[in-house]
Image (tube, rainbow, N blue to C red; front, top):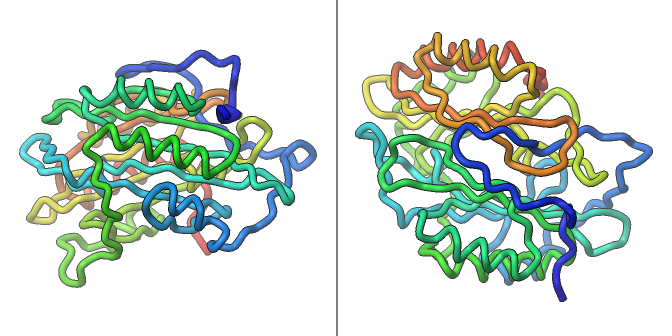
Length: 317
């Protein structure tokens, strides 16, 4: 049985560098959004089995699965990119209401160019939608593409479809090792947190900060939590001497795009892509990717200034 997709009448969006399209939406109307019953982690056992690894429960009752491309040796400007910086495939699930076992799924698959069409073909055959295809970085070697996906239906069948597609790539089948190795990280994370006005965590040798938007985002009548890929991501990988390679993406409304571009360029940060990740979201969102390798505090200040031109949730409990 084919999976029920999120937008049966939407054409597949295959957007390349700096393309304009629509992105995920999280705006919630309590009179239209379907109620969601909180499930325990044990309810996801069949999905864990289908994907060959355990997921982690995220805020918003989202079950997320990570597939780091640790098999890839990608470099950019002399920096060896860690999977946690920009090479992490993932898929996330959220149940869609009441006693139903149905779920919405969204994800981002990191692929070599040679892997793209086999994966797209396999996903299309099983009813998983492709919502965007593009770069996030520039001038990296080898070139990497990012395939964004979504589906709605039986979460086990969705998981089986994603797993089957990933077997067509060299994505490692063994579950990633959890936790960070204790010891010196190489950056003053407390100072970065203070500068940004938002705290993060060290994961896989990278300081990761997530900044949710201030308004809700909704798609297909469902609330889409920030943990399903609609929060601004700011990642710092130490490169020595207090410097960091930074990348990630700002999640923006149309009126925020050009003010943020100006701030980033004034701060010496390259804008590497601007595009959508999803279809049919409300409000319409644009994802702006960036890159720099410079003094970490200086870069954090520029990122903080950019956040000031956006509607973001204030930091706090």
